[in-house]
Length: 130
Image 1: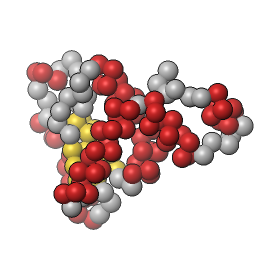
Image 2: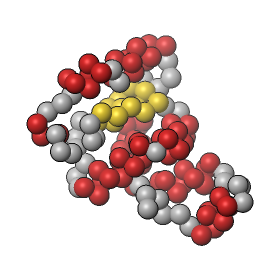
Image 3: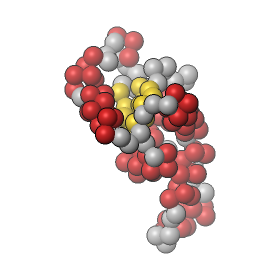
């Protein structure tokens, strides 16, 4: 299971009464490495006064890598995180996460970051089995 869902939240989901804030809190508690990484990138962009920040450091463990993969591979989780933080997320390889704040200049940067060319250029032997 990728999220630690409380019985109360599961009951709400069964009744179709889930509040997205509760879901986001479930993600925060269940996937702390992914949450902390994305939070730190959002904070970095704010401190730097930019519309973009990305991570180049691999996760410290396979458990952390799994959290990151689950957070970014799930449309529901990824979408909730994007709405919560007010950013667009992008992902390359097994750890290179980027946050993009909404802006007209960031659209081109996002398109470049998520392009086939950039994916190919971001490959290395160390990341082949990540």
